[in-house]
Image (cartoon, rainbow, N blue to C red):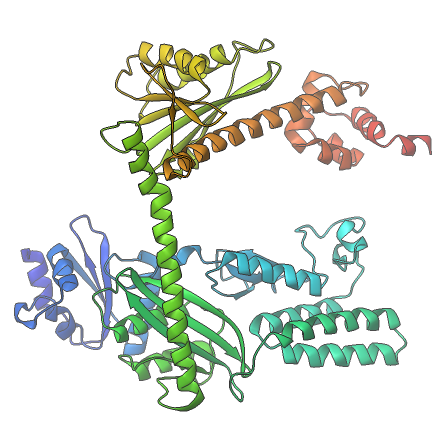
Length: 602
């Protein structure tokens, strides 16, 4: 322990607050709170307390210390939650990958709100529901809501006429003034209630509005509300009554050698409306109670809804403090505790069982992921007689149609996974108009490895057979890269051609190494074909505009640059076309009439 840190320990205050521990680089590695900063922080450095291995590892890396005094312990808890969320310290218990959890956003800050999935929670007046761990389930929920309610999905509200979504009765067309704010707001309120799990309230309100519409002889609206009511009742049937009443979150916990999992059951108005499971990192050496307390603080600091009661599988430290903090967030009383009998205890035990099942499924997923990545790399290294597994692999492919728009792609796999930030695409020039895959491959390899080529791969994969491999080796070895192994992967039977070997290598049919080779080859092909199609569409666009009087090469390029696609040029009105650089009103009118000839005859 350095002198500066020793001096700071002697000056710690007898006040509540938060402490931040930093390593030699100044990075925050642990955030904690205390009702008495002096007693709590000094306890980390007392050798006779029998600290856990985690605390010993933490204290060995502490080089600096910072404290923030607060007025009360509850303020310290709030600040601790915010700092952990911001800095994500290495030694704090944390939700694994919690930054990537999706939310459902309802833009209540707009006159006609939209509903969509987002991964960013902002203080913008919108309402957020989540977080959710299963992105697929979130999109399924959104799909259900859009079938139940004709919500707007477009970002623009200045459309001159309704779009196709309105004509197929999937949108009320607020952009064209087809619905009033009050009617749309009632629909959004029903959406929010459904997302909260309060389907019975939605059923009562829809039935009331349907009966009112029928009484006023508005039978078209009544029929629409009837269909919505039937759909919502069908959803409600799937929700099982589990308690007499009330809103509750039921937490369960399970741990194994592979990790820790917390399961949350969401009970709204006595019905089970959903569940989520969360993986915990950094809590392997902590007691279950400590893990649960850390989860409650991190989860509910960003949760969109806090129920009146949170049921835990065991008592946690500072339980009353957590209840006070949650009550402040909710602006109403929240109870936190462990049930000892009855239905609530049964629910907690069921949550524990589901947590164990979810943890087993995650463990199996991790094992499968290991087989597909690390295991496949090790297997491929053995088959190719490499000294180490190929951590970085680069694969090249050529795409063209009879020599036109010839392009090449380079995809990169790092540790068995696609590394899309490293992908590169090339528009080839030397063979334009005359198909020659060998020369095309030589051009792209020269451009990739001819100059500064860092970082260099551990394995180069050429999409092609023996001829392609020979053409590639002439370039790669010619620029001095003599140590990097290069292989050719034939499309038929996935045979691997190697330098200096006359016979190809056939990987075992069901091996992970073969699957890895297929994935990188298919990804290179997909990336090349996508680029080729993009260039071809540009060429086709130019050929269409060639027939418009007064539109030359510069104006064609300006239109493409300004609008980006042929569909947008077709949809633009004369004023919008004239706004493109280099366009005049007569030229814009000529383009408009070219795509709308009937209007010119009117």
